[in-house]
Amino acid sequence: MLGLCNDAIIKISEQLLDRDKLMLTMACVALDKLKYVFIYTDLKNVEEICHLSYFDNFESVKICKDCAYPKKAKYIHFEARSLEIPKFVTHLTFAKCFYGPLQPGNIPSSVTHLRLPDGHHHDLENLIPQNVTNLMFGDKIHKIIKKKHIPQSVTHLTLGKRFNEPVFDLIPESVTHLTFGYYFNNLIKLDTFTSITHLYFGCAFNQSIAYLPPFLTHLKFGSKFNGLIHGMIPQTVTHLTFGHAFDQLIDNETIPMSTTYLVFGRKFDQPIDVLAFRTITHLTFQGKFNHPIKDCLPKTLTYLTLSDSFEKPIDGCLPESLTHLTLGNKFDLDINKCLPKSITHLTFGYSFNRPIKGIIPSSVTHLTFGWKFNKSVRDRIPRSVTHLIFGRKFNQPIIKAIPISVTHLTFGPHFNKPIKGHIPLSVTHLILGDKFNQPIDDAIPNSVQYLEFGCCFNQSIKNCIPSSVKRLKFGKTFDQPINDAIPNSVQYLEFGLCFDQSIKNSIPNSVTCLTFGDCFNKSITHIPDSVIHLKLGRDFDKSINDVPKTVKQIKLSLMYNKHIDDKVEAKIVRED
Image 1: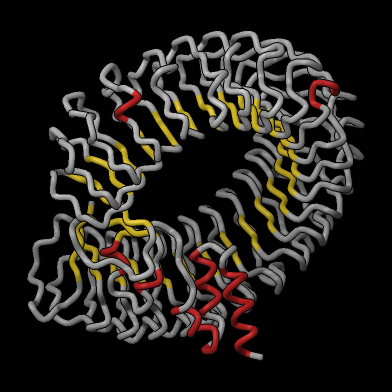
Image 2 (image 1 turned 180 degrees about the vertical axis):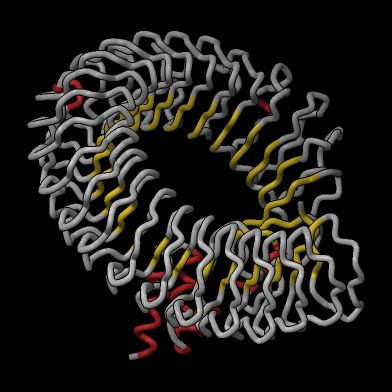
């Protein structure tokens, strides 16, 4: 049964972020074993993970030299500064300092993703290996490109910033994703390219689009495009994005029936018609749009983002299909009885500062308030909300305000009210804003796993941090004694700028990542054997003679010039 359970967990882990996978393995001893089974997909520098016992489980790594890499690595990234390129690299880019020139055979056949350097002095004849699928030309490579230079294996082609040449005789039939650079503004005739499904134009493009590829699904215009589109967009396009200059009238024959995802840029400010958007599920307005939307939104709509200029009433305007609503920065109108009960994600903009009693539907799970909101929330937030974020100016009492459904709670910079007895046991992630500086004795529930304090917090924490906390971060001014204050559950511990207290017998042996701020300058001889990553700030000027052998990496200031004992096995990293 346990094996079956593990199989299910491993399958579920494929949908999780690496951070969440690791958090899951920390839940108990049995799950800790899965740390060596999970595959980690985030791109990581090999130097940062080489000490980990589960090193071989990383799928995507970045190397800076010919070195060992994880056994399960599929994607190996390398930035070349010379012609010394490891033969196993899959993703190859060139540093700005690379001059070349490149010749045939210089690029390993293992490379599938290639970004050529910016110089224009390379011989492109037989230069690009036949295994390359993703090809990006450097910004200065333009007039020398010919079709024979691009292998038939290439499916994703990005032309450089300065490229502005005709492309009809350049694009291989294998290309499915075509991206033009910033300055491209040439006539296009791609109506015979049936393989191209994704087409992205750069900033300067503002030409006729009468000859687009016939089977496009994704089409994105750059900032300057403001051409006619009536009857010109293929009926296969599902995702359509206009740039900031576009401001043409949209009628019921402009947007294809196939389109479900539609984004308008900053200058768009035309009246809209429900018939023009009858198939749209995701609709975004940016910038200037400020027209009435009553009877203009389709019943298919699930995601709606209104522009920062939008200030029209929304009473009776929003379809019952809507699940995600983002209101723009100027919107500050009454929304009583305006929000459909289908909404799960609700985000208010900068200016909204209205009473909310009875207006938030019980369907909302993610609720975010903007900068100016500072109204009472007592008994006003429904028990469906799990993620709650307050904006910059919110500073109201939270007595009977946070429902027991909330798991992720974030307060803005101005919040500085007592929290004792007001944070429910459901909260697992708690972030307190920069001005918060209240006593926290018996205030943090033992459900909290992630706890972050803001800039001004400088209160005693003795017997205040629950044993559930695994990640603990302090702000700039915190400088209190920590003896017997940090629970043995904490694995990631970060102190802010001003902290400079003794750590003797104070850091629990559960901590693996330990970070000190710039003012810290106390002895580090009492760091526990559990620590793997150690970071010290600019003011630290003690000799490093005795750190646990478990410490694999020590980050130091570039100004650090004290003695480091030869017995210290940790990798020393210098940084600003």
